[in-house]
Length: 170
Image (cartoon, rainbow, N blue to C red; front, side, top):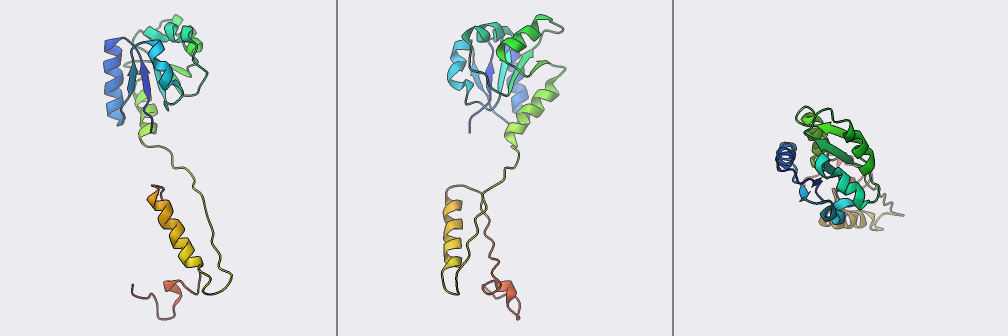
């Protein structure tokens, strides 16, 4: 999985960003110059641009993307919103007042939203057709690739819970 990207040459701001990232449980890649950020720009799940390099980044003209934040330690700078638009950021966060918002954004990366998965249904044409074996093989193969896997045998004939004597010992 790719890490979020911090683009800043301001050491105090970088220290704050790394501390906030640690609090959120994530590690960040760091670019100390706008040109160094280009290889990471499209792959990073979140880009945090320091106000110090916003104009330089805008001059490099990276492709538009989602999940860009402009972060500054300078309060009430009217020029910061122009920089925000220039880099395509969705918001300007002033530290330390808005640290909590940055922690939440980074925390979403550490604990991603559960995604829906693929549902596969195997139906046997008659008893002994091999549907249970095929299902178990598919689940095992899926699990070995690292996917979260759940196998449900809902066949009332082969299910151990369907026996009149109750569950069969395994």
